View 1 (spheres, chains in turn cyan, orange):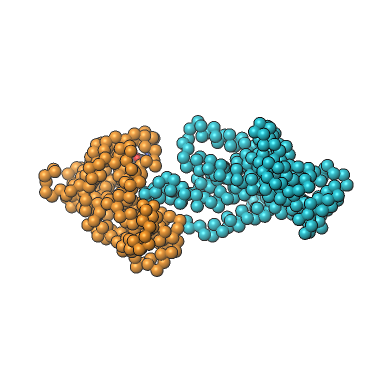
View 2 (cartoon, protein in one colour):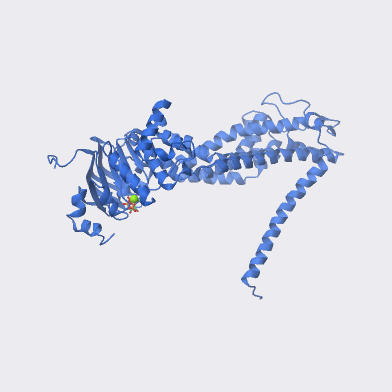
Amino acid sequence: MIRLSRQATQRIAFWLISLIAGLVIASILLIVGLVIVQGSGAIGWEFATGFPREGMKEGGILPAIVGTLLLTIGTAIFSVPIGVGAAVYLAEYSEDNALTRTIRIAIINLAGIPSVVYGLFGLGLFVLFLKFGTSILAGSLTLGIMTLPVIISTSEQALRAVPHSFRVVSVSLGATHWQTIRRIVLPQALPGVLTGVILGLERAAGETAPILFTVAAFFLPRLPQSVFDQTMALPYHLFVISTQVPGMPIRIQYGTALVLLAFVLSMNLIATLIRRHYRERRQW
Amino acid sequence: MMTDPTVPEYKIRIENFSIRYSDGVESLRGISLDLYACQINVLFGPAGGGKSTLLRALNRLNDLVDVEEQSGRVLLDGVDISAAGVDVVALRRRVGMVFARPVPLPMTIRQNLFYGPQLAGMRAASSLERLLEQSLRQAALWDEVKDRLDEPAVALSGGQQQRLCLARTLMLEPEVILLDEPTSGLDPISTAKVESSLQELKGRYTIAVIPHSVQQAARVADWAAFFLQGELIEHGPGTALFTNPQDERTEDYVTGRFG
Ligand SMILES: Nc1ncnc2c1ncn2[C@@H]1O[C@H](COP(=O)(O)OP(=O)(O)OP(=O)(O)O)[C@@H](O)[C@H]1O
Ligand SMILES: [Mg+2]
């Protein structure tokens, strides 16, 4: 075996790591670039505000855009209060005992469940058992449950990262535990919590399997009127026009992908901006 | 002892007080000690003697720590504050605390100072501002920060931060002030400022302080209590205790033979 000098090992390691990083960046650029090049031709006023026409081969994707927006909002309504509340409980109130250890294991396992299983679960519980039907309500609840683990674990980490000394000082100044959480811990943890929330919602916005059986419609001639209506949604629409409709113009497929990508990436951008904003204002 | 005219009036009476942490160590064993009003009461001794533990028992900050077992009583104005059911929030407003490392809350200087009184329900801007100036003057910080009250508190130097923490405690208008090595990280000039603040404050407050050195203990103590491995070895007037200790272990410590 050849023995390399330390400097040589270091150089090789550096090149390997750079290569890997380069591959990651290259594949992102490739995907985004491909979608932009192929899809930007479709983008236009009618595409964003019109309904699909001619067997979806013409027209716009407004109902899918609106549907994904509604589902994301619905998901947030369910998962943010419950997720952040659970994180506060775990980080601030729970003791280390069998119950909380079980909760933690449950959360970790929930995060690992394939999304199609959430879809089946939502079908069984919300659509059939609770009789919500295939509806925005059932879909939002299903996506909400799928999103919970991310929100809970990132929020809990953010809460725990707030220095213990702040809590001791706050309590020593006559604050109750809850006042300390409200006025010191939560504001300090907010950027981390928001990052977790947005990461979770981003995943929810892009998933197809959980909405497949619970809310998504192949085609609807009008926008949903209530939470008990079905809706079209971007990821499912993309799936449909890529696999279920023969002779679909590629421009429309990539245009839809581009809108979905833009939606998710702009959420990412918002998360980054929030983090930057708070980092600059951080006072410790 | 109660009839001895040279012994001042006590504010806090600790009776046969013991604490054991969940790691099994008995950190305080059968402590009985009076802390006097309008005096600087010094608790000193080598590391791990239980001084901080005792101080935290006086405003129930030990509630935040893993205490396994506790016995005995701590009387504040004759009322046992170590019992269950005590209003700890009200207690902590009466018994304020300054920590070894200054911890400004992540907000402005003014917000730091208003934090306690606002939680206590003080709303009127005029009373808050009056209290703010008075507290900052008492902590010898007014001149240095009066023009920058809306800057982040972390922008202050370490010594200024510590005086801010003292002022923040004074904002509670407490009856007792506990200080756990308040000058341990400070330069001599800042240390002198804090010490002279204490001398002025003792006229109105009961002060219990853990000094960071024997020299400081001897400098500031009206009364001094020497702690060794969870036991109270000796308690007496500062001058007597430092010049003529009764117990051999106290003498060894104050003369620098160990510790
Ligand atoms: N939170 C805690 N959990 C477990 N044991 C503790 C805790 N705090 C203190 N102890 C133990 O209690 C004993 C007394 O500690 P304490 O901090 O009261 O001593 P101290 O006299 O203030 O010492 P120092 O001069 O180093 O500050 C030590 O043996 C310490 O290990
Ligand atoms: Mg200590």
